[in-house]
Length: 216
Image (cartoon, rainbow, N blue to C red; front, side, top):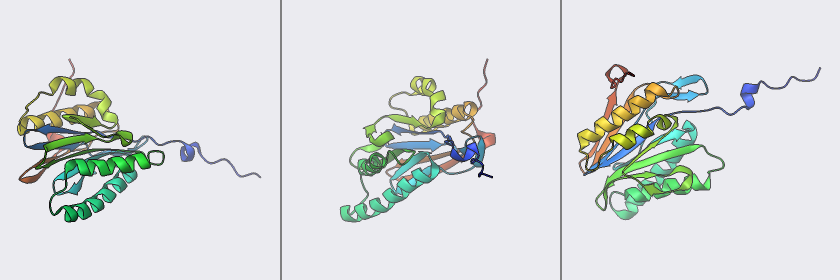
């Protein structure tokens, strides 16, 4: 008898999902994400930290394939260590974003990954860069992942210039929480990292502490 064809789930594309974002404020940045890792209809990790350290003053938020995105982050982490030794100090945030951009463009046909790069340096202060598909663009705030499609209206309306650090914490936590409520591929807890001249501050908002929103 001829061998049966392989099951359809082995050959079909597996969808992934997440919600990531970052925002600048005077003196630093706040970067945040949900924690759910999904493969199609299955949740494979409930509490993955999608905020990856690239250097002491630079972090990135991961979306797309977890393996691809983490591989990019690991490569840039290694390259930035060497770069900082050559520079004799902390690397520029734009230098880190350029490294991510170069890898993303070179392997755009092989990888499924989008990283938001955010950090602080003495040259330009707090900075947020999008690197989707190998582009490089600085923005006052950036959102990404499947959950971002549910919150574009909210972030456009809620973002204000010259927000304080506390304002940015509220902005990020509200936006990610709204995306988690709407997007089945986002969920879990909210991870947030604040990066300033003084260093980094990490925070986790547990499920029972998430901002609550109710439809009329």
